[in-house]
Image 1 (cartoon, rainbow, N blue to C red):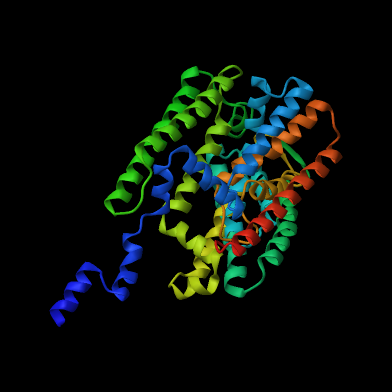
Image 2: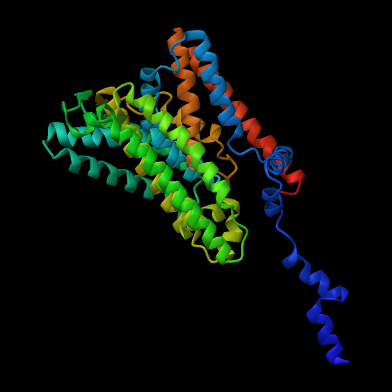
Length: 429
């Protein structure tokens, strides 16, 4: 009898054992999609839209519409010079926005980053210009000071229990005051001509090989990483993208990358600011998606108590995130000072913080925590700067620009809220 039972268990013929083994033998839906070819992907795309999983689709569509509309109106939007300028303008606020993505993943907010950017630029300028310190060393000290500020914010939030909104609002006021104190009666300090800070936003790799080389490295890096990832998934018995799909994605990336390289080479070449911004986005994306630390950030953002019960040091993750955001704000502040040509008491004020937060949200990072990527900062900043640049070409006043940017931000938040509600109702949230 036991032998018969064992035979039935091995063959999976009993009802109980069959139901237990079915999930292991079931075909993964993603494999079926790929076997169906183009129609399979279209059906999957429609399914994601119905369930609220929009991804970057709205942002990409928005960018295409913005470029098309302003090109038709002005006839200058898609010129090489204008597009090159956009890549310069997005670097400083974009770096701040990358730090904001980390904070938003926790479901928190940091209102101090504009002031942190300003005080970091002030410290660097005063040390290098007034005290004759080496510019590289002055910049490093400024960034280290920002990291200490971030650690202080994180300590009060994670250890003392003060809400992040209150802590960083206090920081916004305190570091803005410190910025004015550091600058003193001088008010404004011009960048050293040809110096480190001045070159951040004004240096271009004028050789055509630089832009094309970066494009080639980007495509090759993606192709190698995708193929290795697919191979490791197959080795682990997990579904993986077929080689044909990986190659197709690489080809599409190559068209975009080499098209951008060609456009930049029609103007002044590859901007250093763009290289640094893209490098930071790629590195932080790797940290969030491919490291245990990144998984901890998402876990804390998804549920603090669940993360704590899983053995994650929640306080340490929170403090480190605020340090990362402050450090990136400092780097962004140096780029803003480079673009302006000087550091002053107002650097980092105005709409810098709001644009940086808006970029992260417009790009697809959720205000409710647990969902987003650092590429959101790049996409969202492209949307905002494209709107600003297009309106500038039309001579539209800044007050109108603020209203339009605010409307775009509200639309992004509404879309995020609707998306989350739709995913919950479809059982995916």
